[in-house]
Image (cartoon, rainbow, N blue to C red; front, top):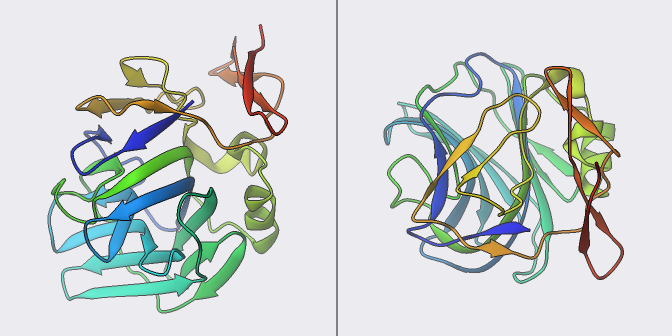
Length: 233
């Protein structure tokens, strides 16, 4: 299952998952409405002047936003349709700020520092900015600038566990099964704020097993057009 995001229901971790450039982040999302011009999928930061954010823009595409205190720099890619799953990604690096929509990459500007503070899914730092209503799944962060081939694989439904796992620093499949959302890869678990409900997951191609610090764990595999679950031992 995925998680249903609303303006008051989102996920948070009281630390920055990344603390240096470059890094890339990605998630699958489908939306029903925005409360503003952007919908935050993954954000890092604690105030209105220093933050990073992967968002859906008003055209339904991807916008990557970087704010280091002197105004925002952003890159935009594509347009999409609400109520259908779309893949969104961003890369923040000293060489480029990239927005990726369903595998299509646009580069604009550069970045110079990493914001620190909370890591949040479904909202920006204030919990009142870039809010939206819809479903979120398969969120991940890497400590590298992913390549075009990486983004193509992710947009095709390949699990983040199979795309540069050596650089994968956080992975949240968002299965909607508990009081927290675990990170089965690096233990960067998320806290639920106002208990976002479970929702049907997007279709994803996963490995048959995964490991957290060398310990085998169950993996949920989503199969076929009916998107049912099978938990592997």
